Length: 231
Image 1 (cartoon, rainbow, N blue to C red):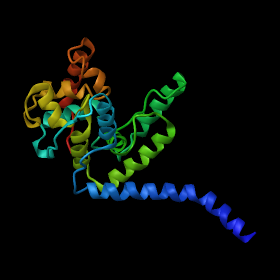
Image 2 (cartoon, rainbow, N blue to C red; image 1 turned 30 degrees about the vertical axis):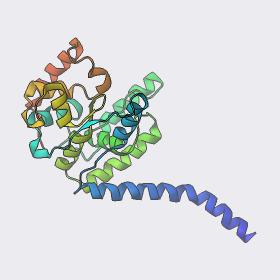
Image 3 (cartoon, one colour; image 1 turned 90 degrees about the vertical axis):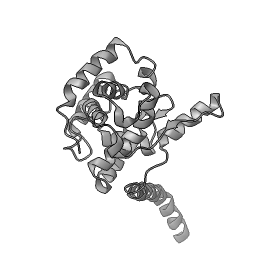
Image 4 (cartoon, rainbow, N blue to C red; image 1 turned 120 degrees about the vertical axis):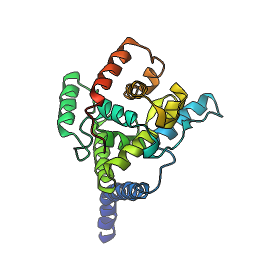
C-alpha cells in the first residue's frame, strides 16, 4: 500500500517537476544569452527545416551585427511599428493584451496577441508560431525572465538580430543586404520603415514590398519614428 501511494505521488508530481525543469532551462539559457549571442532560435530552426524539405542544401540568410552597428533608423522604425512603449513597460503591455483578448472573444478564436518586442523575442527564441493561451502563458513567463536578466538595449539587440524579415531572411544585417544591398548601419529612415512594416507577416509582405497597404503603413511609421525613445 505504501509503495502504491508513493507511485501515485510520482505520477501526480512528475508533470509539475517537468514544468519546473523546463522553466529552469529557460532561465539559465537566457542568463547565458545576456553575455553571449544566440546562434539560432526556435523560429530559425523550424523555417530551415521547412526550407530543406524542398531544397536539402537550403540555408538561412543571417549575420549577427552588434547593436552599435545597426542603424538608429531601424531601431526607431521597429519600435514605432511593433511596440511604441518598449522603453517604458516591464515586458508585457497588459492594456494591449486586454484589447487583444477582447478582439479574440469577439472573433471566437485567437487572432491577436498584443505582444511587445520582449514577448516576440521570447516566442522567437523558444516557442512556435502556434496560437493558444497555454503558449501565451509560457511566452509571458519567458518575457519576465528576459526582462530580469537583460536591459532594454540587449533585448532590442537580440531581437533585431533574430527577427524574421522574409522567407529565410533573419536579422537586420541579412535584411538590409537582401532588400537594399547595404549594411544594417547604412539604412535610411525610409528603408528602415519599409523593413519594419514587414514584421507582422514577413513571408507574405516580403513578396509584396511595393503594395499600397505597405506604402501607407510605411508613411505612418516614418511619421512616428521621431517620437521614439531608444534604450
